[in-house]
Image 1 (cartoon, rainbow, N blue to C red):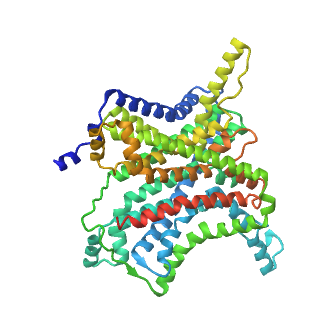
Image 2: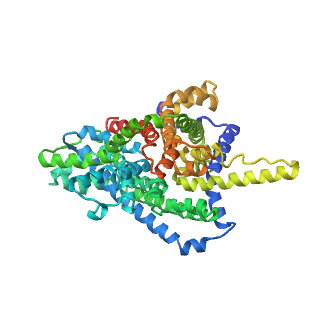
Amino acid sequence: MTSRSESIAPSQTLRSPNKGRRWLVGSLIIATLVCLPVASIFWISLFPEENIWAHLSETVLPHYIETTLLLLAGVGGLSIVIGVSTAWLVTMCRFPGSRLFEWALLLPFAIPAYVIAYVYTDLLEYAGPVQMALRDWFGWQTARDYWFPDIRTLGGAILMLSLVLYPYVYMMARAAFLEQSANIQAASRTLGCNAWQSFFRVSLPIARPGIAVGLSLVSMETLNDFGTVDYFAVKSLSAGIYDTWLNMGNLGGAAQIASMMLIFVVILISLERISRSRQKQFSGADRYGNLETYPLTGWRAAGALLICGLPFVAGFLLPLLLLARYAVIYFDESWSEDFLTIATNSFVLSVLAALLCCLIGLLLAYSSRLHGSNRLMKTGIRASGLGYAMPGAVLAIGVIIPFAAFDNGLDEFMREQFDLSTGLLLSGTAFAILFAYVVRFLAVAAGSIESSLIKVTPTMDMASRSLGLNSMQTLLRVHLPLIRGGILTGALVVFVDCMKELPATLILRPFNFDTLATQVYQYASDEMIEQSALSALLIVLVGLIPVILLSRSITASRRC
């Protein structure tokens, strides 16, 4: 009788037509709001006030597309090389520092790409300490006396983005290597495969779906980046949106470029799903056995230490030390009332967005638990995660279009009827930023909550129903205490993501309203990276929170 009860889905235990309709309506309203920016972009793209598509197609658009493709290929390829090689070494090999690198290689996650770009530009430019030291050592007088690579190029952007995005591939590949069967590894060795042959013939093919997921995340974050490509004068599609809208004053043209970016996102998601669907892996009972590791000594250990140490030092340690140094030197200048106001803006917006994302994510996850078999609800919940795949610049365009239309329509109505101007109520306000944050990061909170909720046995719902509790009472009294860890994790990740968000904030912020991210961008644009160090350091330190959570969950995956 018990086993039969366990097999009953929660949706079969709490079935109430009226309440089910409420959960369904709530989910569809949320999905509609999330999809509104996407619909707005395509609408204004098809019916712009001033159609400059032909002009864009003949002039800048081909260059935007070419640069974006090169950027995606470069960052994706370098991230795979760094992420897969380091994941294999720390998982399957033992060398000095291997335990340290298991979690240290995730730390570049905490540094936004635009921050590391500003730091390395200040470090490597002509007036920076590296080139000054070279001129002192070798007696060079001017730039004509020697050659030094220019970091503010497409290649420099690829390197900067790869240093902070490779952890996506690293964590997915490491999780895949940890989940592989110990018997498969042993079988490959008995068949005569050495360590390298076992890696290429067995481990790498097994990990390919996970690597594909990591690569898709890297690609979407590369599309989302604006601070790095703008600072390095790399004309990608993201930078093109900003130029077309704010510099050329054409919202329709910006929306048309945003539509191109959405097509890129759809292609990336489709390729990732196709890659996963073509290869499925199943773990046997030996999955949690001890993996055979390879001890490395001599030059092999030194090589492994170098391969793992370079990404950690270049992607996290060196930028952190430079930011800390600048923050200490310029502390008196940076610590001011303006800084406290800006920091408060960032914290308040991020906290509110985290709370809203968790509340809405809880609604979606619980709706799926109660009525997951409803196709309409499934479609709505799936659509609610669309915002996470939208680059920040694209999302900003999609938010400002309906908000501006609402403000203009309401203002016109009030003028005609009451001779009263309402001004801007939604667009150009902090609410627009908050709405964009919720749309973009809702999927993060919902995913974390849903992963915790599915671990709660359906018999808990049945027991609460037998005690006379309805669905809402069951959620509040039974499920919430059990899934509070997942809620907290989702809230923390959303909070940190909002603290780092730049493109959407930069476009949607009100006049004279700044966050830590926009302040860092403005100072760096004015070649004053030292004055922005305190703000950048605070963003980095906050970003360490989800990195610690990720490291613990990945390491524990083999032992669970």
